[in-house]
Length: 386
Image (cartoon, rainbow, N blue to C red; front, side, top):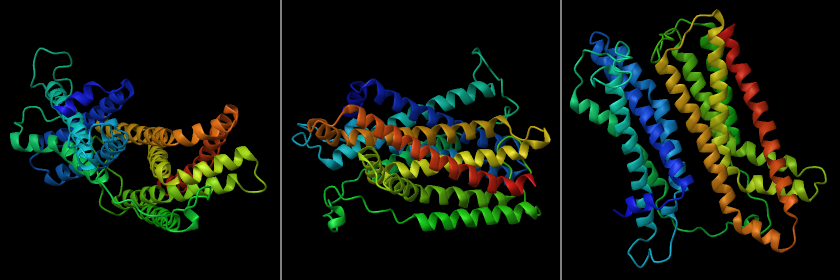
């Protein structure tokens, strides 16, 4: 009941983020049910049914990542006056945020079930009744246990991961003078490993793109001719970009402060270094998704439509969730800089300088990650279009 009251009393932006989590959960639930419908409609193709279900893992991971980022910014996870006296310490507040995530994802699963049954033709008398009957395996009876299990996957995984991420942790003491006030934040150590994974992924894509003798790995819809090796290479590339994102963001901050920086560049670079771990990983994931889209688009050069509606829905879920996760992380970082911003304004720092520094940060990050995305996209698409 307390979680429901906190949901009702939340700000409109918080409610919008929770509705977006519900929408992402609904889309993933629909994809999972579509894989079940394919399995029931094609009992003689168990391998294809398993591959359709496996392909839902990427949208599921994107939706869970977005749900966790929303849970981190949930006001119910922040300490409030009177909460400790009511018996809600850090662990209780983390539990409330996880429960809010569970409610949003469960709502999305219910919507997915209703939409799936309507498009399949099991619910009569509504618009779009049976509009996708052939695609969703209409006519085959759905198992109740399997349907409920698939619908519970997204709420269960998102709730468990949110509870784990928001669990109370012991505060750590500063490790050394690098941690002193005014000192730049230490560089993340994932950049070399990320670059190595990107190189390995591109090498795997190149090899299997020129030796297309591997077993095809179909995705939901059409697009049945993509070799599994190419897709495995893209996965390694995506993991590498996500791992290298914080390091690239920190490097961008260092480049801004190079060669006799002024106050604006110094402030912009220090803020980027401090926020590298928070916004760098979402930036890397966005780069991975965009590079994958460009590489996959190169397969459409023959003019034949290789992608089905379910594949496009999965791609839309991944893109929307990754972009929303990035925007959520940026807003959270801005909220956590409130005290520093007020301190700068109290010492008579012009507000225009702060806005200029924010614009310089955005321009520098966009330029660096756009260049990285373009380079990785070109290298990843070369073996596919050759």
